[in-house]
Image (cartoon, rainbow, N blue to C red; front, side, top):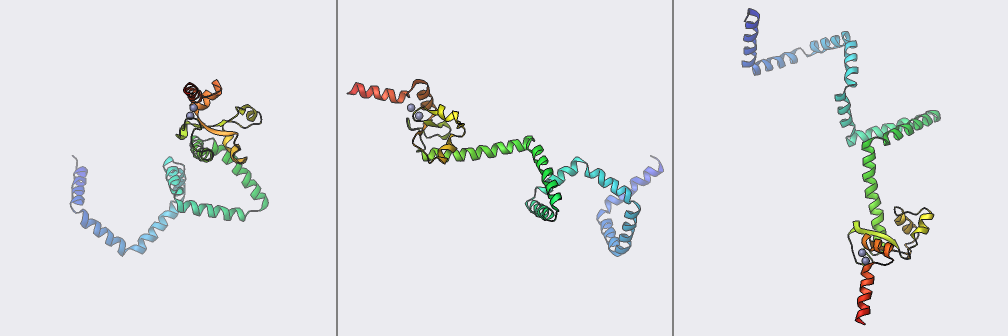
Length: 222
Ligand SMILES: [Zn+2]
Ligand SMILES: [Zn+2]
């Protein structure tokens, strides 16, 4: 160990031993020399302005900054403030600026919709909305399979009583949009709720075995 290293070790030990006392002393020094220190800091900033700007620019491009900014902008109060500011900016624009801004927004939104997160969020939202809309219609038709009484939502479907769904398909009403059609047309009694089992059997065999079996039993009983 050379002398410089030895001195550094002693100083370090001294600082550690007197940590609190030194901190209090430094605090007092800052309090007593506030104006002078502020002036010095100001002068330092002015002399190193370019460095600081370059550093700030570099930081602004970093992932850490982007993430921090993203977190900050997700806060409800910040979002409200930003959207109010945006509305104010829009109102202050000339008609040409408004048109340019809208065109830019259209492009931005188109690109944004392609991102996996937005796609997934939309899918979830649509799933919830679609289910609610479909459930409402199923409830209108009794909320259970007209054949076997099944009430589990996932097993239920809308069925064309007279098996004329193909006519609907020709005019663009699909299995996916049938519930909306029913609602728009006052829930006609040409539709009913069937579970997928009963619906499928009716479609393939002309009647659900629940019905034919019951009929046979009645026939035998008579
Ligand atoms: Zn059924
Ligand atoms: Zn059935």
